[in-house]
Length: 151
Image 1 (cartoon, rainbow, N blue to C red):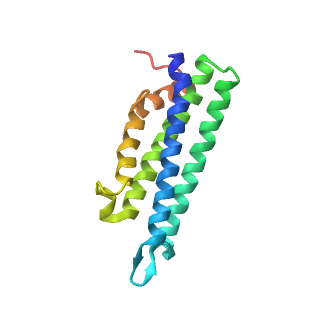
Image 2 (image 1 turned 30 degrees about the horizontal axis):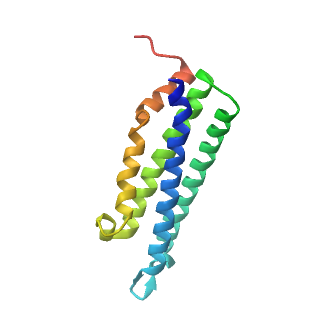
Image 3 (image 1 turned 60 degrees about the vertical axis):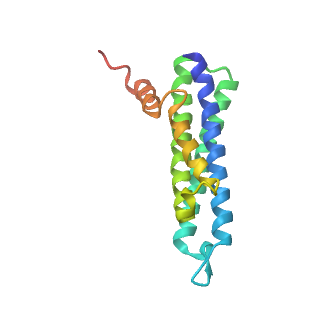
């Protein structure tokens, strides 16, 4: 299990990178798209969506940095497990939310194979699954808070 503890922050980092890429693509798209004579980026609802996407991505980034610093500092075992699980779970859930919102911002084009954002959406789902599903990560975090459930 120690190998998972050290690799989960890496999966979290992939989630952060994916989320940042989705934010960047969405910004580029809404700045170039015009509806009813206005750039889509001028609409308040769009701006708020992007603000939330950027905020969530930055929060995930900081959690991943914290977990990576814990690994670098030599934290192991039951001390590292919940930290690594939180970073992996939060960052990959963030990647999924941000990719979903980016697809929404792209509209019908977001699901087209001609636009790269659809790949981000699919890849985000994979990140939620590998190195232990996010439900498993929540079990690890819960066990660190409350102890293991007796079976």
